[in-house]
Image (cartoon, rainbow, N blue to C red; front, side):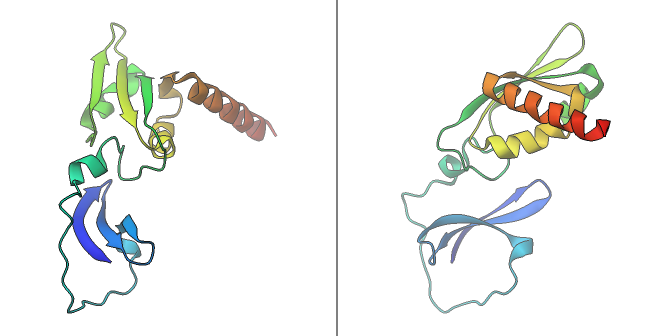
Length: 150
């Protein structure tokens, strides 16, 4: 691989590098690299590669979706202060609501990664948009309810 950039995200270091095996720029978590060998060869980062564009709309580090998804999430007042403490890596707006809750608006290229973060707030976070994600969570939580009723 040709290492381009080292990026800290969520308490981990990630290497943005051109992978010769897959012939594309990939992301590697440093703690998962088992062996490394420095070669004599040199390389130059292509002038067409722009790290800001590459990392655009990534909630944390990954971007597996072909197009970004707009999210609107309401965080209850019990957790609103924790949202202010979070380091956002993308354009995210926060709007305080009269009842002390907080509306978060953002656009992400990885629903999976965003949802993983969002689930950590449990019932204190409510997806208002997009509706298909709201429905997905409803089904998920109904399954969880059935699981715990056993």
